[in-house]
Length: 285
Ligand SMILES: [Zn+2]
Ligand SMILES: [Zn+2]
Image 1 (tube, helix red, strand yellow):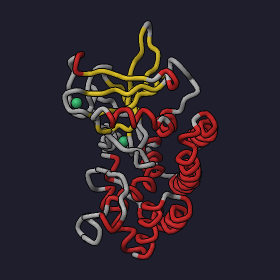
Image 2 (tube, rainbow, N blue to C red; image 1 turned 180 degrees about the vertical axis):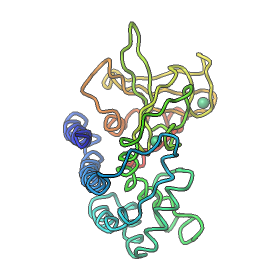
Image 3 (cartoon, rainbow, N blue to C red; image 1 turned 180 degrees about the horizontal axis):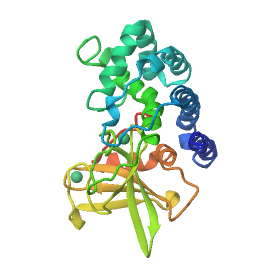
Image 4 (tube, rainbow, N blue to C red; image 1 turned 120 degrees about the horizontal axis):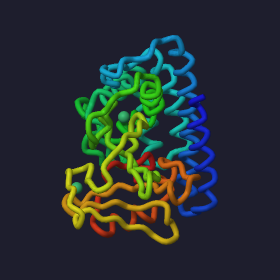
């Protein structure tokens, strides 16, 4: 049962709330969001249960079932209004007021767009707010969080894709990696990346920058802190981008996307040292 993957995330977030008190607020928010996402995934599963598997040749984002997705969107916005930090909660209130046509536009713009995201800002300072051609960064963040379970369902229910090489973006949907994973293989570890949109995991080279393609060892480095030994920050000194990797050879208990969210001190370290994150997470970090 694939719903178990949502339960693992929720359980891990609850666990880490006490391990990393500095992340407790963000993790509590995440737990509520993931619980909603699990429910939406279950709805999608119920509705699409009889659909045949989609061919791996068809790009994942060619699908978009608005009849299925739109009816649950207002419930999602009310939840965000109640539980999110101020800028995102305000953005949810504004988007809620736009009604179904506005919701559809926000969903379509994001799904068919470049999947670029920025941290939510005060609506008054958002240069794109009110511009009908470009959705505000907060609307994009909301659409992203909402569409994740749908993208993940589509990724889970398609034919296996044979991937050529080690692409820097998701071979299924084109999303950027949100976190890396290290698993043991022989005497060493193999690396894979997890998609920010559909949660698909694909193999990747150990020393290679997914942002700029740098592959020279001195330019590619990593940092880790003794208190959070199973998570490292992979940095690129050519394009000054970073992405965290969760080392499952050090703890099998970790759930990559959740441990990524919780390890805020590593983001602070990276930013202080002039690195910018390849892909922000749903806390806007
Ligand atoms: Zn993907
Ligand atoms: Zn780079």
